[in-house]
Image 1 (cartoon, rainbow, N blue to C red):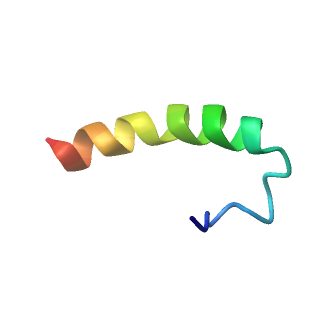
Image 2 (cartoon, rainbow, N blue to C red):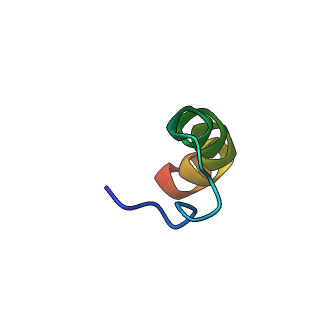
Length: 32
């Protein structure tokens, strides 16, 4: 899986937690 913020996020753990939390509102909007 390639993430758009791969260059910005160095730690995978940070990527998983922060990206997931930041994506929650977007996923909720897209998913309905």
